[in-house]
Length: 443
Ligand SMILES: Cc1ncc(COP(=O)(O)O)c(C=O)c1O
Image (cartoon, rainbow, N blue to C red; front, side):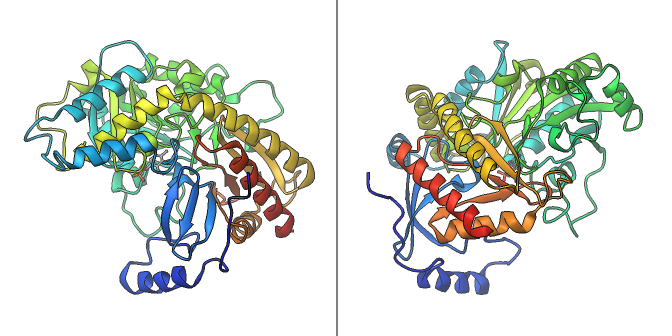
């Protein structure tokens, strides 16, 4: 197969720069632009910009493209839906596709108990709804989130998000009754060197909560099993088991945020499947509808149904076009074994990342579940001082070579892979060659 990357101009090219100028004059600069590229077209893991440059996409619109850009099933389903209905408002009239998406989510998510779902527009809105439902069902006010968490940009989800810059700075005051617990970040754990996860030590969670909040006042513990914007930090199984046991003991609902980890990214349908975890509520979005805005809360029927009629909803939630897309994506996930493909992509990424770590001493840690894999960059492997500048340089060098790449992490020093899981082997290899060359060029 001949190379896919085809650069006809410098990057960003003249048309992208012209659009960037129009953007600056028309759109608030509060919305950042990491690549400077303006995209015109995308297929699976390849995007073409407005200057005709063809690039490989390791960003996937921040984890939305697990089934690839414009999956043929999705394109077909959305086209067909356009001939029938684009909006009704599910609080006004029912339509089958919303119900079918809820049925699929109830079936696919962990646990064989009776479930219910609600569909909304964005990940943040889904987290807001999960907290509303947990508070209503338990009659308790408090919520525990974690260090390194990212749950969104609305007022409540900002409060639950950990990283101040750029997500929180200047935007307070934040919603009350949000408490923050330590996240098991083993690479930077002060107790590392011992055996097992320190968060699973007997009494650890009782000690944490003693100084944090009365457990009898806590409605929900909300957790990403692999913290995404926090730096692709997968929690050890013992820590997750200890947190789940603590929640159960105190009647606290365990809410898992699978917005970035879900739909095959970690090599299983959900990250929960790695932990044999059945959460009380699970929150999904991003790759659920392959780029159309859709998010969901799915959970135990008695919790989800505890809320009075009219207490939940919204004008656009579960839009018919987004539901048609989600049904096509769910069908593709199962028919094309996309989670299994995620596991294979993850193996390939891990081999190449480990080879790079053997050559580039700035790579301090290679980590993650399945294809949700990352490289944490440090100035020195002993001190582990984060190297954000290097991560930014690698990202810029990758772009020069036609690879769209994202950084992440509380310290901005992590390179992450969010490549479509349907990527062709040769294109994945070509993207990894470009990443390797970007490391070499970044010094
Ligand atoms: C784990 C997690 N939770 C919540 C969100 C917020 O989702 P949205 O941007 O759709 O509001 C994100 C987005 O990146 C996320 O990764």
